[in-house]
Length: 122
Image (cartoon, rainbow, N blue to C red; front, side, top):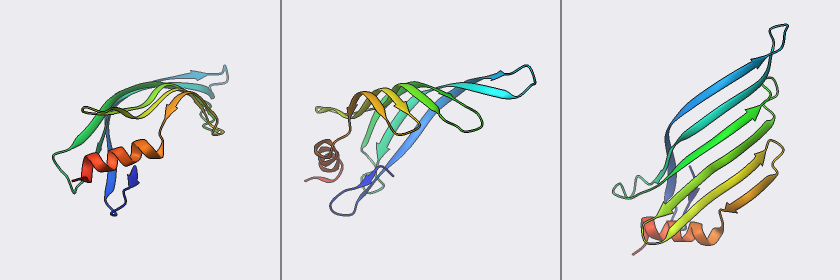
């Protein structure tokens, strides 16, 4: 779930996409690096308002250590827009496994409130 709005209504997330990856090996045959490309459509919805869906395309590359899963993600992780409003959730840039993020990140409470009003408002 993405979040819960003021009236207790839940906004959920559904992703449809494709994953393609390449594994790099050391001479001894052990995997040392994975580069994974993810792309698709991310859709936000609520069971309470089945006719409304907010969607956006994403495409990012995750480069990581296959043992520890530590690495970085680069590209568009979120890109959700609302009709006649624009971007609600957006993150374009680089995210690190330690939680650091660089780039254009816009996931703020005001936009979440707009999302709640769009789904459940008067």
